[in-house]
Image (tube, rainbow, N blue to C red; front, side, top):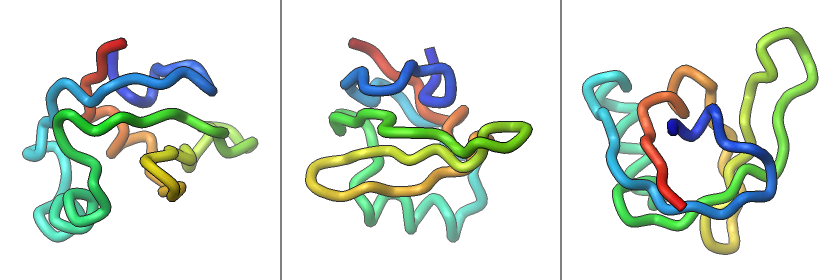
Length: 78
């Protein structure tokens, strides 16, 4: 399952990241925020329009907004 498919309020671990699916500068920023393999994340809510973009991801005490296209690069496991 990828992060964009995860139901709201379910905590999981990031199992694998396809960094080639994300632009290099954006990948660096996401890694600096702690979004990398082994991190515990939870979807807190999604956008309300058409493609439900962006996705609000809780990691630790912070919330990060991700595009769905970026969230697809993160494989997760319970």
